[in-house]
Length: 301
Image 1 (tube, rainbow, N blue to C red):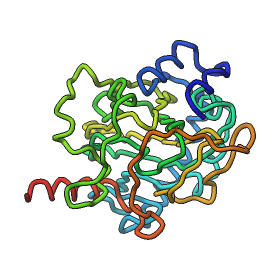
Image 2: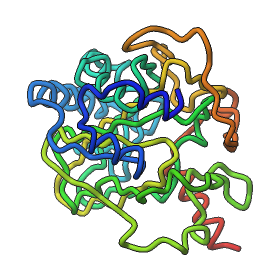
Image 3: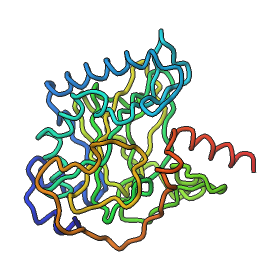
Image 4: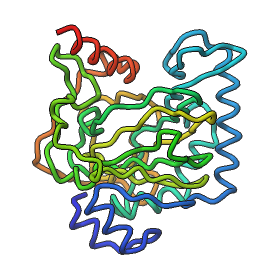
């Protein structure tokens, strides 16, 4: 669904100022938007998945492990598709709290695309370079939104999401490196225009939500604290927005309508979008490894 059509529907959860901020700046942060009853369930479910990861010796389709992970000291970057591994996550993804937020920025009919749980383990977990999301999973329009929920809250030293204000109005950058690898980052020499005053890295207590547009440039710094930073990231789109490449993060839930009705017609935004590799053929793998490979290739040239 295109922006003007979305805005023709009244907001349910966001204030008009919050919705205007989202469409003007490419994101909006809502401190404590998710109630404690939900964050408590998500926290307990996260603990169960971390316990399960103790049995894992190397990264796989479910767990992305940090350096130093062991059965005695589990350290995780990410859990892929947590909704497929614990029912609390799918219930939350389909909840009124989440789908109403999504509807305010994608329209009344809401489709699920994918989710991941980024743990960003304590004491030095790696950050994530500047990038845009939509090039990894192109859709027929640019309605997709990622809703990030800080399950335990997030302070400045934990590496919060950082967004470049208004960057969704600008160009889509290539996510490929000089050697043709899909690096999931914007080349540093393409970001020389960026100044500190253009960046916002909102923090907040448990249940703080960040709504992030799919074209917005964003990243995060290393977690320097002694606390993990669990962040659930859920991607929704308008029901009439259709992915036309395989999802990098597969799930049997992909494409389910979680609010409203299925679409009878597709929405199209004719602005071009770079295509990713064929994920169904080659697999997505670790985005952190992709970024490290691009860094090493750049240094070696």
